Length: 151
Image (tube, rainbow, N blue to C red; front, top):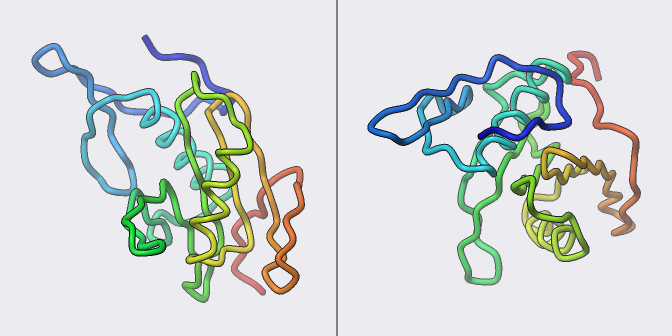
């Protein structure tokens, strides 16, 4: 049922109720209907918390943003110590190929959020980018920075 993702093993909580599967979101602290995209999103949340050491308190999950008078929803937004947006993450189901359209989507969202770091993942392939907001230039990087207390 659950595809093995390209993330370390995390203690992801899953339960079945009335023949439906639910997955626990550790940031929103609630059970959500299990979908392939939610499977990826929860793994990505654990990756950011357990591997990159970002506090869950600095994360916003599936919040609305207004873009050119339309309502959109980002997957994961991580703030830095100064509470300014730091990392924007776009999650896709494992069956969804990451392509230019996916990058166009996260870059459009980032016009509003202005995060210096982007992550695009389908759980199998992860792409990390650094946005130079002053020069409007994007470059691929090997990984996201770890959370750090000191500047």
